[in-house]
Image 1: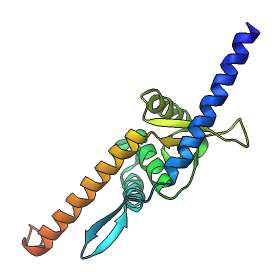
Image 2: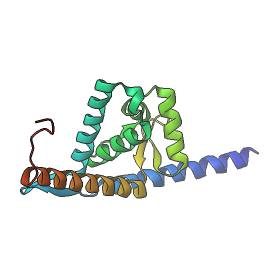
Image 3: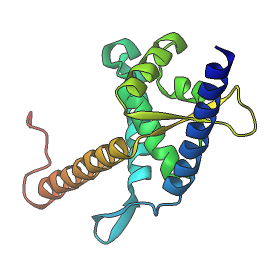
Length: 170
């Protein structure tokens, strides 16, 4: 029994080291830059941070309980952190979820079991681990942010180029 436990521990250690090595290579990717308007550019990471900031402002104005979506808040934070070459600890991810930590931990577990996020061990402190988006989830969030940004700026351009900007009540 002890031999099996030892082999299991070695397999976990190897898997953790491979995941950490894969995470280092993933974090070295170039930031995704997009053209937003009139020659200006932005990174998708900055779009994610701006969008998350607006969500927090909305929550402040209307209350968190109306628009609670901790999974999306976590995904946005992890995406932006990756773009900034930052690691996100579990406690930090819980804060980013904008819900009580028990709810955030359940959400993280669900995202992890669905393969959307990956848990990476801290090489210096085995008690701590970090989260990152799985590569497929990273691409999905990037695609959504790109579509969101393109649509937002297309709508803005149409509003300024053609339609009257005066309120309907006038």
